[in-house]
Image (cartoon, rainbow, N blue to C red):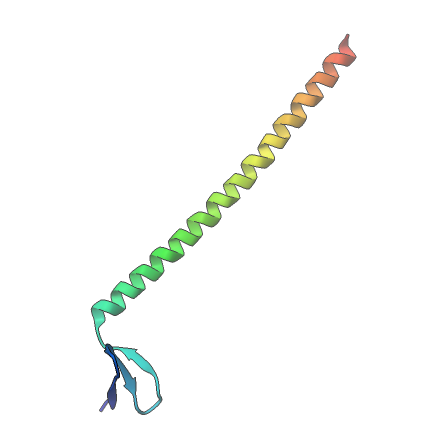
Length: 79
């Protein structure tokens, strides 16, 4: 048998008197929390991926500039 006590001023929370754990008693709130947490993790992952792509694009732009300089040098040598 569970021995749960209501948490003062928080109707959705219960305290397990056996081990002191604070538990959500409302499944809807718990599911909403899990959904928000998963969404924030996805946002973080997408943000990291966007930053990685930006870095790669910057590297590509540097290579493009270097290639342009090499072309100009080669044209100068060909004259």
